[in-house]
Amino acid sequence: MKRREGEAWMPADDYGRSLEGLTVNLLVEDMERALFFQRHVINADVVYSDPDFAVVRGYGAEWMLHADHTYDRHPMRIAATAAGARGGGVELRLHGCDPDKAEAAAVGHGFQVMASAANKPHGLREVYLLDADGFIWVPDVPL
Image 1: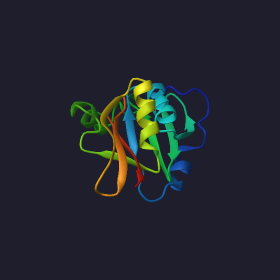
Image 2: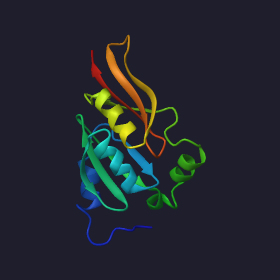
Image 3: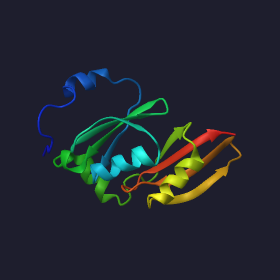
């Protein structure tokens, strides 16, 4: 069930045809809360948002958020919400996102830090953050 009123930012079929390579769609329970994390914790740019859908861009990538209600008849929603933590087993890495700043923002806004920023043997400084929908975000920078 769509909640957006008025016209979309662009026709869905035009946007769909514009996509290339790997894209990520994240199902979110509360769009505003999800967008808050995107803007204020990982410092991503929200290209477009409405109550149903958002396009987010940052660190050389673009991803999409879909509100749960837009998948009300889709088997993906059942799988995502029945499995417990939505993002279990997936790391959403943001190469070039300062892990120390992201950690401070997460703490300041009440999001969970799973593992504090640390230098790792694989040549990255990284932090593990959990957003309100259970997705694991890993901002990192090269050492």
